[in-house]
Image (cartoon, rainbow, N blue to C red; front, side, top):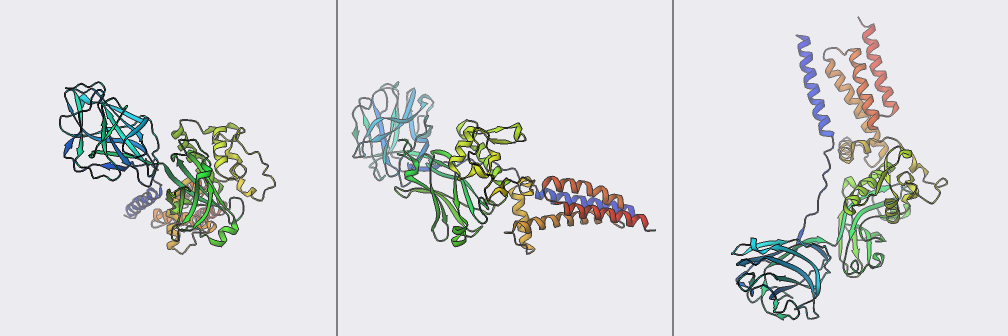
Length: 491
C-alpha cells in the first residue's frame, strides 16, 4: 500500500513539474508581417457610371494624400464589364499644377483581364508591379484604360455623381492620354499600402562602452519621398530619436544615415543617462522627417530592455541581419570556422552594421568577419569586459523566460533591475525545484540513489542553460551525497 501511494505521488509530481516546465518554455516567435492600411479612398455613394473605357478612351480620378507619405501596394476600383474588354491597366501618375489632370508617365501600374469581370459592379484589386512612395500632401491621379477593347467591349468605373471627395475630381481622355478633360464627379477607389517610415523593432543595452551608458538600437525602414526617389542624403532630412512617451521630450537623437531597411544606434553617455533617463521606463524610438515633422515610432516594451550582457547584442545582430537578408535577398551573415562556426557578419553585413551602430565593430569584434571587422584596436579600451564570453540563461532560454523570471522575482521582492540578484534568484529557484521534486518522488523516505540520479540531469541542464553557477552545482552535489550517506548509515 505504501509503494502504491509512493508511485501515485510520483506520478502527480512528475505531471506537476512537466506542466511547470512547459509553461516556462518560450513560445516560438513568429515573424509578424506588417498589415497594409487604407490611406486614400472614395468607397461610398456609388450612383453612376463613367464613360466607356476602351481603346483611346481613358478615365482617371485624382486624390490628395494626407499628412503621411506611404508606399501603395494595392489599388482597388469598383468596375464592371460590357462585352469582353480584354486587359485593363491601372496606373498612378503625378498631376498638373492645378491638381485636376494627370501629367507625365506612369509611376507604377498593374493589369488584370477585364474579360473575367462581372457585368455588375464589383471591387477589383490591382497590385502595382513597382512599389513607389507617394509624398504627403500631394495630389496624384489613378488612370484606367483598356486599350484592346472596342466600342462594344469596354469597362465602366462606378462613380459618385457630383463628387464629395476634397481636393479631387474625375476626368478622361479621348486620345490615349495626350490631352485630358477634368469633370466634376468622383470615381470609386481605395488605395492600400504601408507607411514610408517604419521603426520595426528596438532594443536597449547598458554598460556598452562605459558603466551606466545606454545603447538604443533599432531596425528601421525609410523610403520617404521625394528624398528617397531623388537618392538624396537621408542624414540631411531624417533623425532617429529616443522620445519620452510621457512628456514628449526628445532625450537623444542621431541622423538616419541609410535608406530602406537598416540598423541604427543611439549612444547615450553615462552622464546623459544619469541626468534624465530611467531604465525600463516608457519611451518611443521615433523616425522623423525634419522637413515637415512626419514620423513613425515604436514603443519600447519590457522585453526590449536587454541589460548589459554582450551576448544579447550578438543575438540582436544575428536576428536583425537575418531580417535584412530576407528583405534584400543578399547574404549578411556567414559561418566562420575560426570563430567556432558561429554566424557572424560578412563583409556586406559588417559595413552595414558598423555604419549604423556606433563603435559596434570595436565593442563586438567577434561578430565581424576579417573583411568587415574592426579597424581600431580594442586592447586598451576600458570596455574590454564586453568581450568576455560565457553561457547565459537569458540567451539560452530567451526573452519570454527572462520576463517570466523577473515577474516571479518581483512578486517575491527581488530587485529585478539588478542582474546579479536576478541570477541569484533563478539559481535558488532551480535548487528549490530540485529539492521539491526529490522529496515528492521520495514520498515516505528519500532514497540516496534517487537523489544522486536526479541530480545529474538537473546539474547538466542547469550548466547548459547557464542557470547554475559552480556554487549551486556544488550545493546540489553535496545534498545528494549527504542523503546517500544518511541512508547508508541509518538503520
